[in-house]
Image 1: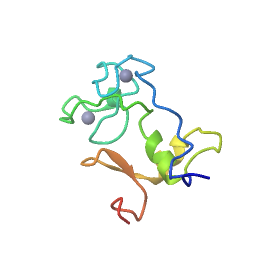
Image 2: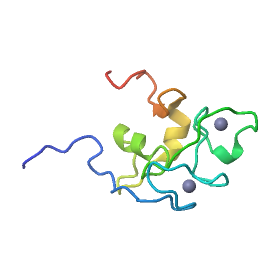
Image 3: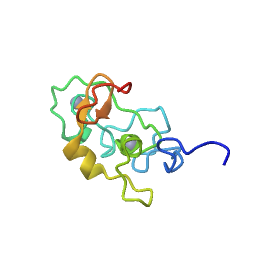
Length: 109
Ligand SMILES: [Zn+2]
Ligand SMILES: [Zn+2]
């Protein structure tokens, strides 16, 4: 009973490198990496338009969107982020590069 459980306390530890292209945390994914996101849409970078001018995505230590799932409590209860719910419910913020809950424009509520 030292510290109360914070939001996202069931978040699994960071993974030191991308499971697909092995980019380290903070490093840019390989061009073909299916984990990399298009920072303009939040969707798979491999599927974005050739003319898209989004910045290159980096490996954050988590699967894209996983941090938001834990923050919003959208998990299956066993530490697995509910990414389907994230994709269908949340809105991608192309400036903040994160998913925003409906009705929550900012993190300050
Ligand atoms: Zn990668
Ligand atoms: Zn893009």
